[in-house]
Image (cartoon, rainbow over all chains, first blue to last red; front, side):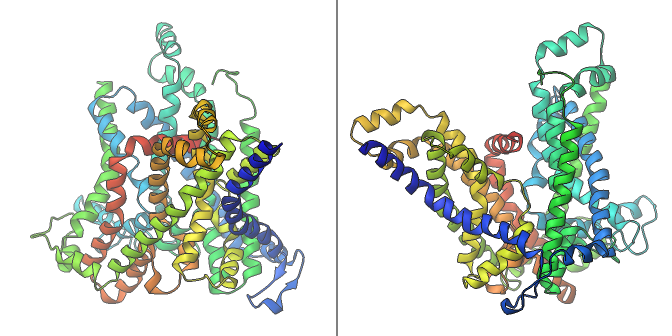
Length: 296
Length: 272
């Protein structure tokens, strides 16, 4: 009896510090976020009015919100396709490639470990019309450069930001797929080659289907990464020109900390969360059954 | 032939990663006119004073020390309390412990910005807004999920016989943890510490909202602020030097520990 009591006390004592901090600074604000989205509140505690779904009605009619959501989805689809296809291609290429592969293994995660702030500023500079590497290179080979700059042109800004996003995120997906490829059993590889499957046929017949669980993880991370984009856009374009690169979280930041529309801003946060959940739900449906059975 | 083409492709990709970073490094040694004259050119003679200017005049030096303070301050609190919780989850199962573990892990999934408004007011009411202490406490709370996740794996891998032996020798539960298990988990603590340190050093979004005065700026805030200010002062060399100051320490740490960091990232990524 005494032993079990000292055990319980020990468990309680050891979990309390972490539990307290996590409860107060993570769980509590999370609960408050959902509640706050139903209030009209400008930060003065006395003037907090419950308005039910009013913020969401307003959101529904807010063209900037839809524009931002559209931009998020654009980056999700275009960026996601590039991340997954290029990620797989490089991971496949890296397998068994000698010296070059080794060099690449050392550097491909560089963009992941440097701060997103550096990535954003770096790409803003790369695109700079007067001293940027991109326009400088284009001029060198005699190609035209965009008049208003890449980030100033309303048709080019979103693709340009997506390129920066892909540059930043790609290493993570290469890592995932490289690990997945390593897990494909040696015999499967050999059997495929004995059956005469090489190159593309082997890739589509064996490698790609065998990567099923990695593809599911990768697709989920694309959703998480894209719905999380803030610093990159905020520092590269601040959502401009003319909201052409606005994403949900930059709009949230603007509503909360520039317009002091705290309740409304929180409803954007909740909408962002719901969209991410819905996308995750779609992915769970798409990947509901592994066609390869229990193997991978 | 095919192998050759693959190598060329991989090499091109490696260049897209490395060239922009080298460009920052080279540009950080150029003078203002040189930067504008030719983006692809080399500096005529390296201007190391750009670094001095960034460090002193642009306030990158003080931001550097703030970043060190905040990063180390977070780790000093995070690692012991994370390890304590992880140890309980790994070795002392109790009713509801799996649910609680799941609640801790949930924090790895949702975006920080979902809670940014309530968090801002929480800190405001606690008078911790715009303080390094407030930032450290928030960083500890938000790093707990990942830390507990990785360390639980580490403690699970340690043999329970060691615990039992220590307890037969008269150690209490807590004594066993501090004197026997913690030292054994040191490799895990180092990996998690480095991994967290990189993330904390780079963190921007939370700091942007929770820190307002320049004297409390961490490096990411400092360098972002410098970009705004540069549009008026136009010391571009110093700005590029500032970028190098932000990214060089992480790249060095990454290079030294890259195998371990790689493993940890992968473990964290595939858990779901």
